[in-house]
Length: 432
Ligand SMILES: Cc1ncc(COP(=O)(O)O)c(C=O)c1O
Image (tube, rainbow, N blue to C red; front, side, top):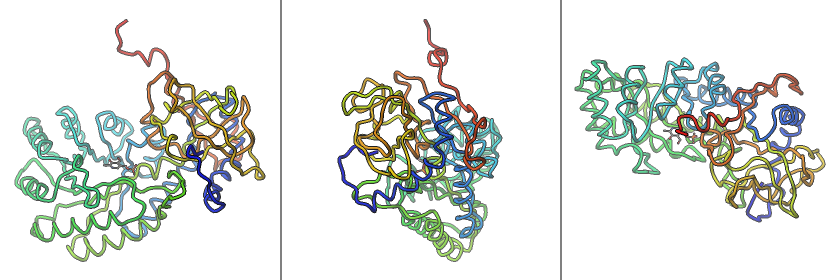
């Protein structure tokens, strides 16, 4: 669970209790899936996904009736999961050609495309497929305008504005550039300017969203006439809602506020800065990634052998695409030896099979002392793991889906929703 040799107090240890309870409740299903499909595997609990999404949707609809959720595909692009999100009324936030194609293939209608670089091919695909293009910089604006003239079709556009609190220059434009480009758009018959966007990652409370809304409001109030704002359909406040479940618990950890609290404060800011100040009532778009995808996926590993204190498993950090566990702490549980009574931390470094010393899952875990053949669950591993996984040494792992809500023991209700990568898939397109 944690690589740094930190001593958590009882209160901090108890932060993990919900994960242990979940593991206890779903233990039979998870062990059955490991047995049936083998390890390593990603396993999606669709019941958790559905509950999670409806909680997020309801929280925002309550405080912002005109809110719409656009799921950030980049956080986990598993088609089966995205289809389930679509069935729950979620829209698409995409960042590249593959994601645009996936969104179209799955039948999404409302799609927003945001990236700091967009090729002509990508821009033209977006225009032809009625995808809203979120303009990042003047060069992309010019490309979109030229593509429209070339294709003789109009494009729907929005502008990405740099976040006030974390002005990463890589993403979006400053207010002056926005004002100048949006006025050009208002005079371009091919361009329908319908939105404004801003995004910052890893927010633990609503402060960033509130300050962005305030500065957007100030700019719109002072730089535009009211009739120029009549076609503004939405303000997109981005993703970046940090779920408590996906943070690394450490001694100094700041626990993020709940989604209901994010929604409450953002709702107040929308009313104050947009509806009351500007006299307009646009849709508010949100682009959560991590908040939706992290909790419902668990990684399952099998202990192969033990060398002294070091455990070797069959799944490595290629599954998460990062040496995350060098510095961060996530709950790791020995599912094979877990009961209410042994909610305790054990020591032992859990390694993966890669030829890299940073390939490990931390040095502590919950449950009984690990032995060969035990199944380990790494919790909350759905965001920026499968979509960022490495093609190094091991195949991209299989993905299984089940629904813990439907029955205590899902029995035959497991679905293989992505098979393990094969030799032919790995070397597709290579000359031999
Ligand atoms: C434009 C944009 N929207 C949404 C997201 C999703 O962020 P998160 O997964 O933190 O919610 C990202 C993440 O990088 C992003 O760049």
